[in-house]
Image 1 (tube, rainbow, N blue to C red):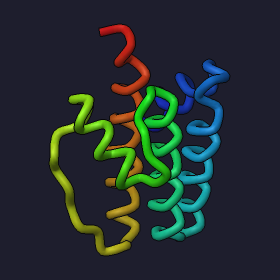
Image 2 (image 1 turned 90 degrees about the vertical axis):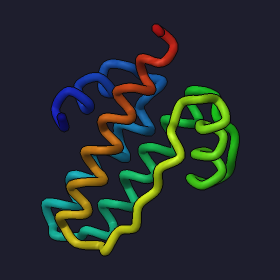
Image 3 (image 1 turned 30 degrees about the horizontal axis):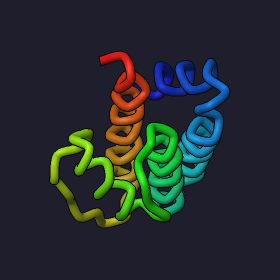
Image 4 (image 1 turned 120 degrees about the horizontal axis):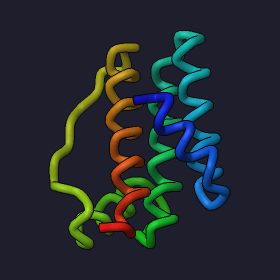
Length: 106
C-alpha cells in the first residue's frame, strides 16, 4: 500500500503536502519513532481532507467535516503508541488518502 500511495501523491502537485508528510511518516517509522510517525500520518490526512474541501483547523474538526460530507464513517480507535500502531495508522491513512483522491471521480 505504501508504494501506490506515494506514487499517486508524487504525481499530483496539489497533493504535495500530503505526500511529503507521508514520506516523513515512513522515515520516522524506520527510525523507531512510532509517536512521530502517527503524528505525521495525521498531518498527511489533514492535508488530504483540506484539499478535498473539508473544513477545520485540526484533524478532529476535519474528520467531523468529512463525516458530515459522508466521506467517513463514525469509527474511532485508541492507540498505544507502539510501532505496530504506527504501521496500522500509516496503512489506514494511506488507504484513506487513496480513497479521497478518487472521491471526485465517483
